[in-house]
Image 1 (cartoon, helix red, strand yellow):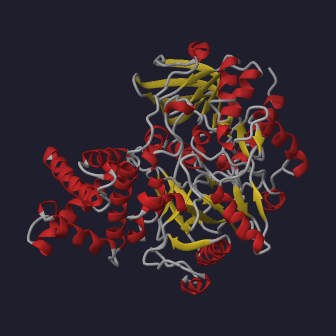
Image 2: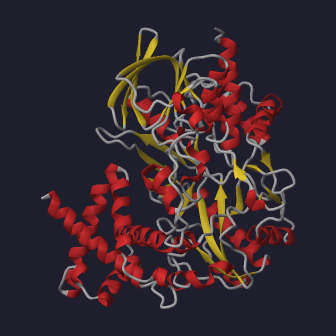
Length: 618
């Protein structure tokens, strides 16, 4: 029965992928022409990577879509003519029923990502760590082992924590669920990167009336390996609000400054050595004309002395900085290992884990640091029966995108991530420029199909921008029985929807001031905007269920503080009620900081682990 369903599903996916591909085919572009078997394979593989609780419903909805073809054309969808298929797809894309629109968006976005990614340059898949550290990598773990300290998760929080512990002479094991990959394993912001380094192939979503797509790193180095490297310190007013509302000790700007400075030095936080990308300057110029505060955000990139080309820098991710330091100090790294639960037993912790090759293993530790991120850390704790203020207060930065078209060229294959952000209205909302490669542009234009079909010709004149709000909404993280992936829920408030609408309107105003000739917001049924007068067509509050939201910033699911009615840990990450269990990742941030949180995570991790070492001398 399963084989029959799988074969049927394959046929429907193939018909959908070919329909999408044929709609983009161009005689002058061999790379966009059939066959489209690669599109089909990619969509099927992505379906296999998605969260288990979503796979079966998506398959059922897809097969239902196929059967409905009988009502419209007398035959199942995958047996219809090409023109009849397109009519059925368009009907579902324009449907008033949300899941029908979402289903078509899912298949179309994946097919376009593969189609426009055909031109990507191949990169060698370099998995092996530097030879000098090979003895520190545990590739085939024993069934049972024991360490003084185990750190779970190797993103910025975990890498810094493990590094400083190992350099202090502690016996440390750093566990990572994903692979150990170099920066060169794939092109940045590519389809290959999504497959190699993102959890679930980049298909993670916070459920709710207004769903929010989000991404998590799943590789050694975590989010630092996939993000843009933009860096902010925690704003002083945010630190003060944490001190007052959650009774957090030791977070005044003066107390945090040495930790920010140390981390900035280690990862080479700096401004560009040359001119910013044209797309970045368009936003900056538009904001400046309006008298708004706009700034170049520094990044954690290293440039050669005297460099003038901003494209020559190297991202200083965790695999470039703290992970090598950790290994050099004698720490052990265990990749490809998922910790399912932890249990306390007579002063130590037993970790029940599974290695990708060796299967179930058990690890004993005197102390455990959880650094798996704002979703996986609370999920692990709740699976382990530790639930007090855990996973109840997830916050994020809801983000809405708009594609801008300019008469002059603003985009190139070397652009990367533009660096300017508009902070005139922060922390309520802020604006910036996003990834603008042809695959990402094609996906950002799904709500504007006529313009999406022109991406191959006009992409050098296009760039994607975003409006990001701090938001009042909250979410929950809950593990599901016998299912690997946790369920994440998040609800926007009415105020959030208004702030997003106002942020979008102001972003569009700045882009028109910067010279945009047309704007295409990521809202279903929203018209293209051609001038300032068209801004009146934007809603005062974003319509529920019709806005395509995303975020790359998640936090606050296990907030720190001395107020135990609100917080999961004390001010330095120790879980309330335990003496040897700590959290050191984005979960600790009490509320949304309104800026990229990685600088906050790194500084807090350094602060907390140094506090631990002072309180627990050898």
